[in-house]
Length: 517
Ligand code: SIN
Image 1 (cartoon, rainbow, N blue to C red):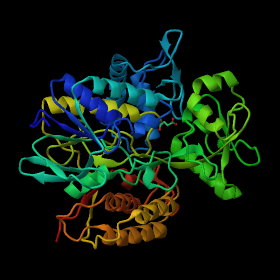
Image 2 (image 1 turned 45 degrees about the horizontal axis):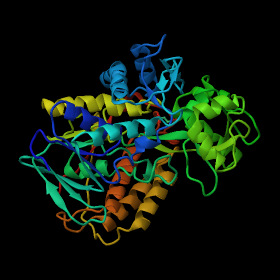
Image 3 (image 1 turned 180 degrees about the vertical axis):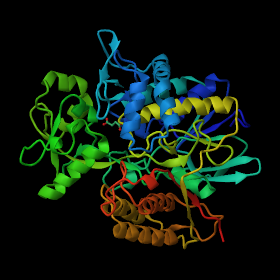
Image 4 (image 1 turned 180 degrees about the horizontal axis):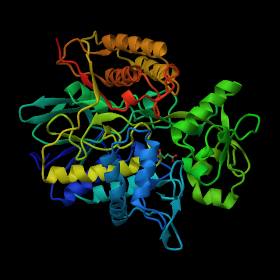
């Protein structure tokens, strides 16, 4: 393995990790990508809708900025959103240069509409296979290059040392532990949707990167804002397959069991209201009617258009004998995107020197309390670019101070109970008690139970490596503790006991590991 400051270790191989590696190589560095599964098994691969950028006629970066600020419910960091939206067209040009085959109409890039966007500005590829096309294209570029790739290498620990960050890696079965020193580390490990029982994410999206950074002392922020996607497939025994928001952008509507189109009762923008609004409306309808699901109705769309624009969705539904041009599709909300994460500044600096981060694993404040659709792939590129530049010409920086900071102790535990049943329980706790609608006493119970699980799963000796299950518990504690602390409702975080937003909570909630006694 190469060594030294010009040989960054990039952890994760979704859009953020692959893009940083490619750009770092172009800037003369010798990166290594470390990824816990195969290089192309990342959440990015499953992104359907697309990637937002103001590149169409009648659009502007300022309109994209305005929509991002509005969706974020008063908590978007304006400078981060300015960077995201204004640099989007240049990053799209990079993807085109790498060969991403964006869909076109009459020679022009085709642009779709999604909720809370005032213009059609969603680029897509392969119809609804945008993430897959991006992941595959970037993977091929990486494999053609001399970038070192280490698959099935799992990040186990980050340690702050005098000379920088040491990264402990192992094989997935815990064998072959090695410590890598003397190289900048970039966390691009993605989100944690799969820690919820009902999730649109692939099984690998369990957010260990955040838990590991937290253990090392990095500041974490905004963990209460876990975004739920309104429309995932609902059939007993079937996965919560995503039914992209672009379907509603094309005109699909939501109906209850009785056939009523209910969204106009909730918001003027109806099905194109921000994601948190649509999610809560569906949840409310489910509670109100006792129904198991609501229905996505795309039957008014021309069949040809549906099959051309949404081939992945149509293929999936065909496996359940459903045809969206004829059938209403049963849907429910599910956990989708981690808005919070490792706090960074706009260059990707975390609060630990030598540790950079970008993509879903981070909290830059760019999404505020509710991410605008299709701003997530974009985030990986825009902030990834600044991480690559920083690796090439390092500068000092750190995330802005949190408006309020919690200190969470990590207990010394018994370390013997960390089996898969604990991860199953964590997923149930998060979905049942830290879900779409939250409430103080239920959150308290969740925190108490998670603390008990931490005692069971943490290794007794702080020198021992915590396993993945202990990291799942840790991450769930970060989410539940933050959700309990924020006594208001805002964006993706809704508290039935505090149903309104409050001016005193217009701040980011940070959380750090309490020092050992
Ligand atoms: C979708 O296609 O609906 C998901 C897009 C996103 O999460 O931004």
